[in-house]
Length: 163
Image (tube, one colour):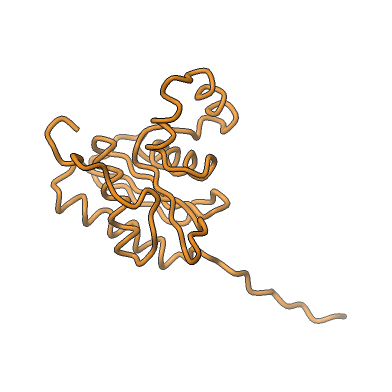
């Protein structure tokens, strides 16, 4: 009988890093006095790596957070960019939603996570407050974890009333 060995898999976005991103995002949300947030981190294959939902979040927030991250990974651009590029193409948005089995949320809050050489290693999606505020927490959390977010900066007026 031959020896059986389990080979070590290379993981570009380990659980420890994904967990830091989730926790940092929640910290930024608390500091900005945002509504309760739900944060999901997906690896580059779209697999859920880390997830937290603050007390008081509605039951759809998890699906929305995952959909923001999933859409960013699926298109290779942030969910803000998806919204901006597809705002006048509702039929294509509908097709993307159908192709992704509903896991496509084209509003800000889905941010790509880039590693060395700007390679995408995953995405973070946040839902709970206004989309620009969700995106702010995602960008800041990825940066605090020592990785590069895409987009690199939140919209300028993310904290103004009404966002």
